[in-house]
Image (tube, rainbow, N blue to C red; front, side):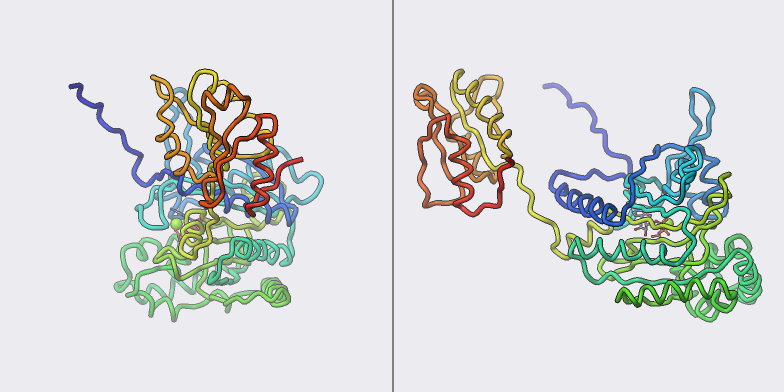
Length: 440
Ligand code: ATP
Ligand code: MG
């Protein structure tokens, strides 16, 4: 007996999407394409690997992501410092600047792809995860903030999801945040001995993020902390009021959450999150807002920007919870065959049926030829196909096929001329009420 080779497993926190989960991913991606198209957003695909500097500058040195979550490495061949993207905004903005995409006016962009963060794997949190994101670049008004938020609502509707709530806040301008930050540090210093290690570490680097803490012991302290809303100037107020009015006009309910901040330094004015209760601790399915300073920070001509990032795994988890995944089928027709000549006819017939728009599974032979009719028919039944097309010696000699309806016990098996096979299956499909429309 030979010893099996040692198994190689996936990297911790990086998950396979198995075939049975494929339908949900397809549903999501289809809806994402439809919704982004409905708002005139164009797709952009940027590389998964970028220079580490891009994220250090574009996300900020004192963020969780840059401090401890990035997959950074040195390219062995040339010493370049590279990083697997932990998010896509920085890469998109880099590409926009590099290709001067804003030369003829603002741009509305979307992307979908894998992101990488070295976090503790748990439900709703993995080390490779997918995001759908949009970036509206060059628009300053709150109307675009409202637009990207409404895109999310349309996506939830299209996916049939309910119970996802919108929370919004304004974090003002850099100056306003600086004043708030000073007040916040002064306030938190009074409680320094009660803070946890994380909060103490952030106290002088990223105190805003302490407001976001999930530690129950700190809730009372952060609840009473100075709020950014008290530091907003007239312009920031007007922007926030404008957004709220547009959301109300659109009949969209929201909650102003004065403690909502973003972990990323480049955000300003609007921040928002979509949250739900059905996903356990990782209930935020989407986060976004405005990041007007970023384009200039990355070397471009100053231009305002806003967008969101949405976690696919969390939304797909919710689709499963709420029974919103469509049934997928791999086959309308299963082709059973026996004999050399039947095999050749089966190939031709399968191609013809596929040309007519059917999903066709042709029985695959083993090394010693086809399996018995009986075992092929078992496979046909298990495939979920509506019809088996059977080709044996008899049929082939007569230039015919037997067609057996698999889901209607009362319908009889019929012999059909090969020349009429497609037509027959189309008719039978229409009569059986199966949802299938042949392409013309
Ligand atoms: P969290 O507080 O959950 O860590 P975040 O603030 O780091 O979120 P963003 O950087 O705003 O998240 O990313 C946008 C969305 O991407 C999140 O709302 C979430 O749905 C998803 N997401 C973020 N990190 C992960 C992860 N490690 N695994 C799965 N999804 C994630
Ligand atoms: Mg995070």
